[in-house]
Length: 320
Image (cartoon, rainbow, N blue to C red; front, side, top):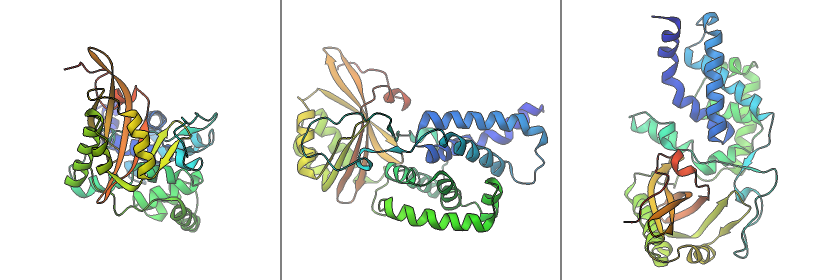
């Protein structure tokens, strides 16, 4: 077996989990993919000097984490609209603020290949949009330590080696990161898995509401304290009444919308298409839903048409 073939055999099994790790750090899919590519390039270049003092997995995570930290030196945090200001009091579209970058959605298929139910659930929980946004409030080093220790369960000694620091420093940094995350992170326990029947029912109500212009279905789906965030702008809307005002103006007429179910960030989601001619639905973007036993608590709308193809959906749909 050649060195290149041996390198691929030993390192390729970790590619998807490394992408998930870099996404947690960076909150951007393209940036995470670039860092993973850089990680494998650096690893290949130094593979002949790898002495096996740690596992291949630990070695790759060390390279990837430090590449993420370098990337984060060049920019500020990514955000969701609710992290930029108060909810809107009218339906005036929010502007896209100069210099602000936003959290991006992640297709589950890019980071998940496990068939173990417990692993799938753990991965989904650590990739939910609100948690990814909350992680961005942490300084980069705190973010790295918390992810490596709390999400990936690396021992403190291994994390210290990865980050060229001491075990005591890792423990201190983790304590500060936990305290900060408690201030910004949402409650995790009540969010339903996308495969849960209740979550599927809420997704169906959302799709019905748009495809049939049925605002009653949307009202049934929304919790009283639901919020809609128009990611890419400063606009977000809080409370079922305000959300329904927004949605009533968006649904149009029956047949104006087509919704394709997908999963993103461990949550049910849709690829949205809008009818623009007699024979075509063109992509609008992606909406990520947060289902709970009492209804949808959040809808994050990413009005970026190109996103649908990132989720493996067609670039357009024919009118039936």
